[in-house]
Amino acid sequence: MTRWLLTGGAGYIGAHVARALLDSGRGVVVLDDLSTGVRSRVPEGAAFVEASVLDTDAVRAALTSYDVSGVIHLAAKKAVGESVEQPLLYYRENVGGMVSLLDAMALADVSNLVYSSSAAVYGDPAWSPISEDTPCAPLSPYGETKLIGEWMVRDQARARGMSWVSLRYFNVAGAGSPDLGDTSANNLIPMVFDALDRGERPQVFGTDYPTPDGSCIRDYIHVVDLASAHVASAQLCEGGDAAAVFNVGRGIGASVWEVMAAVSEVVGRDVDAEAVGRRPGDPPELVAMVDRIRADLGWSASHDLHDMVASAWPARPNPV
Ligand SMILES: NC(=O)c1ccc[n+]([C@@H]2O[C@H](COP(=O)([O-])OP(=O)(O)OC[C@H]3O[C@@H](n4cnc5c(N)ncnc54)[C@H](O)[C@@H]3O)[C@@H](O)[C@H]2O)c1
Image (cartoon, rainbow, N blue to C red; front, side, top):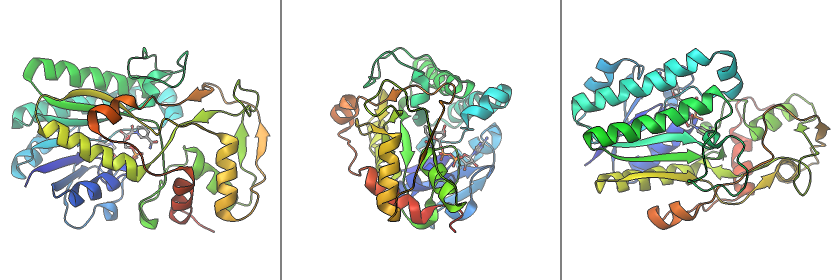
C-alpha cells in the first residue's frame, strides 16, 4: 500500500482529501500543528502527528517512520487581509514551511509532491476564463507566498528529480458531511450563513462591476470534487515524472447575486441581501479554464453551486 503524508490534513480541505485518499486504498498520515485545524477531523484509519512543517526533523521522522511515498502539502496560512497586515508571518509559515518540507523530503528521499496553490496567484488578470499560462501577478502577500511555493517546487524538482503537481484552487465551498464544514469566515458562503444566523442582512460588496448583474463573478468548486482532484494528482505523481500546474475549478462562474439566490433556495426564504460598496482589491471576474486538468488528469467537477450551498448549510460552525 502506498502511503501519503498530508500536511494541514486536520483543516477544512485536508480533512476531505484524507478521506478521499483512504477511499482510494492509500494510507494516510496527517501532520498538522492544529493552529486552525481540528484533531477530530482526522479520519479513523489515518495516523496523526502533531507538529509544524517548520520542524524539519519532525517532518523527516514522520516521512521515514511511516514509510511515506508522497506528500500533499496543504498546511498554510490563508487569510488575504491578514497577510497584508502581517506579511512576515505569511513568508515564515508558507515560504519557510515549503523550504522545511522540501528539505525533509530530500533527506527522507521522498519525491512525490502535490501542492495546494491558489487562484490568488493570478491577481486581477486581463481576461477570463484564466488558463494556467496566464501571467501571474498576485495582489497580496498570501498570493505571493503561494506563487513562490510553486517556484520552489519546480526548482527543487529540476535540481533533484521530483514528480509533482501544483493545484491552483478557485473558490472552495461545500462540505462532504455536516462535521466537515468550512470554519473560516473569509469565504462568501460561510459569511452569508454567519450574517443570517446573526439575524443580519448578508452584504453584496460592489454592484457596479462590468459583469451582467454588476456583482463579482467567481468559480466555485465543491470541496469533495477538489479532494478527488488530489487523488488523481497523487496517482499522476506515482506514475513518475509528473511536472504539472492545474487550475481546479468548474470553468463556470457564479455572481454574488446568484450565490444569494442559491442560498435563498436552500434556506427556503429570501435572504434579502444588501448592496454595499466595493471592497478594495476584488477583481470583477475569476473563472478557471479547465481544459488542461480535464485532458491531462481526466478530472472534472461533478457538483454544482446548489450542491455546495446545500451541503454547507448544515455544516456551518455556529448554527442558530
Ligand atoms: N479554502 C480555500 O478557499 C482555498 C483556496 C485556495 C487555496 N487554498 C489552500 O488550501 C490549503 C488548505 O486550506 P484550508 O481552507 O483547508 O485551510 P485550513 O486553515 O482549514 O487548513 C490549514 C491546515 O494547516 C494547518 N497548519 C497551518 N500551518 C501549519 C504549520 N506550520 N504546520 C502544520 N500544520 C499547519 C492548520 O492547523 C490547518 O489544519 C491552504 O494551503 C490554502 O492556502 C484554500
